[in-house]
Image 1 (cartoon, rainbow, N blue to C red):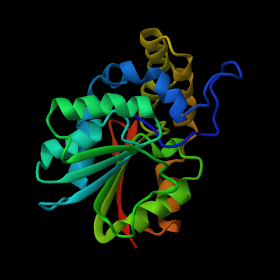
Image 2: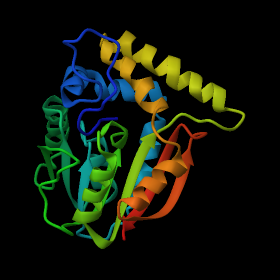
Image 3: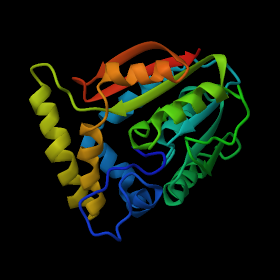
Image 4: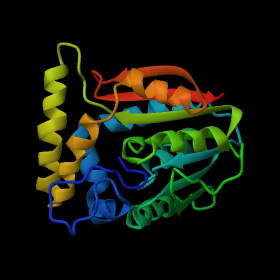
Length: 246
């Protein structure tokens, strides 16, 4: 669950520690990032990615942008389900991208999957240059989310789809307390225990302060996107936002 540029939330650590959500923070946890994702989500994150890729409704030969690509899990999922596409992945963490490039190379996909360092708030791509755009677990860490959303609207063609997968803290439902316990206590504990990284304290903070689905959908609309649907996943622990440029 990688991230775009650094967030204003800072983990409880000394002043020399990388800022929460920054590329530098994710550099420190890159080697065990995939394992931690599987363990902390009990493997459900892969199903969430499948739904995200399906929401793009890609046609043969499509060109896809994967923001906050991290170790390229979502980029590779696009290529697994749509082998005839080409994917460009962007992330601020060079070490996360190194892990991703190794995975891409191991699958022999370097010709169709390009990973590069970049900022979701200022994309180096021409207008309407992608058929689809996905972003998994990264928008909550972008300092200026509206600016990033405007960039998404700019680089995706009018008939393309934008699918944003993001964690949230369930506030309703009978299983809400259990889900909140998982997010606030279990996930950060496992992260610190298995990685030894204090930066995982940031996880709960960034999730709990992310806007409720209807509020974030409003930000998307104000940023030039037509929101097609908002789908809560796994009791609201995660949410899939699907939109297109307006």
